[in-house]
Figure 1 (cartoon, rainbow, N blue to C red):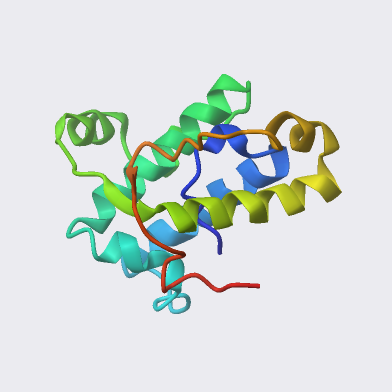
Figure 2 (figure 1 turned 30 degrees about the vertical axis):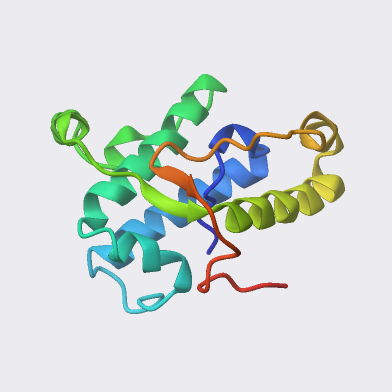
Amino acid sequence: MRLWSLSPEYLDRQGLLAVWREGLLAKKVLAGKTKGYKNHPQLIRFKASGNPKEYINRYLLEIYQEAMRRGYRFSLNKIGQETDIAKGLKKKLKNIKVNNGQADYEFQHLLIKLKIRDKNKYRELKNVKHLKLNAIFKKAAGKIEKWEKIK
């Protein structure tokens, strides 16, 4: 499971589809509707947020919006009912902090994947200097997060 801290605009088609599926799995895990993945390190920051359900829904909404921008047909109902989403958007959530080192690590990890599977996307992104994050996150000073599994 990889729940990218990066803005979904950086993901290629395969990455966007994967993060949607994995985000939906994370939503089930956080709701206690699965037996596996309960202690997956990618979920630590959502659990620590104090409101994992709202944060994973907002995270998924960012993925959904990027998919719609590209003309994909993701189902908003998989996140929740539109009225619930609208109510949730009115709530002011603090951003989850992500260390600069983590964002940089993820970006380099993504570039390695893109160099193999989507050379055009790789060329588009390889010179990005100022990384954007998924809107639920905010950059903070620091190294790679302790929960990251470094390859």
